[in-house]
Length: 363
Image 1 (cartoon, rainbow, N blue to C red):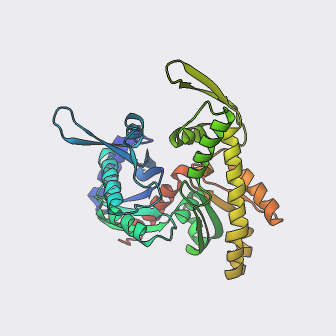
Image 2 (cartoon, rainbow, N blue to C red):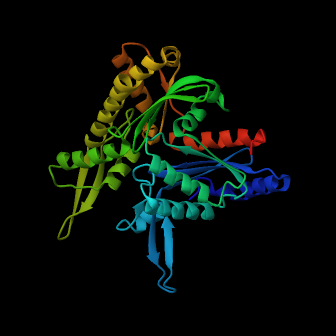
Image 3 (cartoon, rainbow, N blue to C red):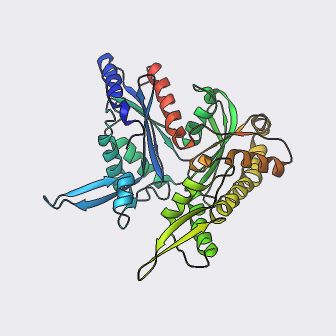
């Protein structure tokens, strides 16, 4: 499940060295609605574990014991029973928290995440006290983070890799927009202080998936119906504002035979609408509130690049599209940037914060 399986030996050596010196391993974690990412030191770099935030259970045919699969294996092998434990962004109840805890422990064990660690979690900005409390129970109940457990806003953690090689973001003033699966979040930051946090569930990556599914049905004149998981795969594999190309797929027909179809508009129509809606929310809901409450921060922040994070920021060309449309909407020049790997950035930024805490003996 790791993005860097070949680095396991060097990672273990690095972690062993930390154990010998009594220094906990600084780790960054992002438990996301679609994907979970863990960033772990590996020599002079990082080993990143990235997996779908889902699990499925099945019965061992030999022993009769319940077994657990997580991530891509669970989604591929058991699509009929796979459970996405953070579908709404947070565990909604005790059962959801238990499922998330089971999933997280499976990931920790399978990827040798060290218990003697200082862990920083990137958490969403959502006004949901019970959900946040449930997530906290998952975090504090895990087997990692023996030395330290802290949480920082996902939007701050995700901005860290976009604004420098270290923690320059913590000393800066800027606006960030998190283009997530379950929410669109926007915040201003002033030297690490979060100002005017804004969240809406009206503009989301999940809604894009639903739109793609609907548009595919319309484009194929009702001959093709896809589920939201397939729609997400279409989005992740084909959405591209720079070099989109029509693509073909095949479905089995009821009663036998197959049907090949080509998608020319559905994916890009959905993501194009998404960018318009995201710009509308930022320009006409978030920024006026920021200007009203903190006019100087508003002025300073818009002279700096707006940082785009979250899974939707992975779409090629979306940063330039957002920049151009927001410039037109505000009738003033603005710029936008994104980290090199938006899907990993929150965990990477959290890991850098954890590393700073370890270096400062703040554990």
